[in-house]
Image (cartoon, rainbow, N blue to C red):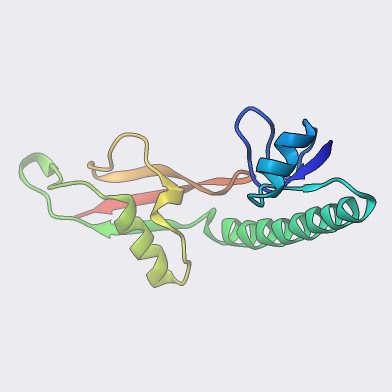
Length: 146
């Protein structure tokens, strides 16, 4: 029996996949537990429509993220930090602090999207990577000043 998966099924396939399984497995487990629907022309049409809508929404999201990327690409975010002897910085700048600073500037970027390689604990400019989407990744410059 052919079915369309509504959720990922380990060992069988990912969401929206059309797979061939035994009638008993399909009826007694997949369909009964709302994990799959029987494959028909109508269900295939509905699946194609949903995939099309999802792709359009994702493209809109990518366009919005690219706008943010273009605005932030050439900016330098400055943090005033306390320093000790020999200009050694007390503590480090975290992704949460960067996210909060971006929020103050009007950009809502989650701290999980900010990837810091190493630590930001020296005066000067450091690059951090921001991954808003798999297809929208850019570098942001962070400057630490006294």
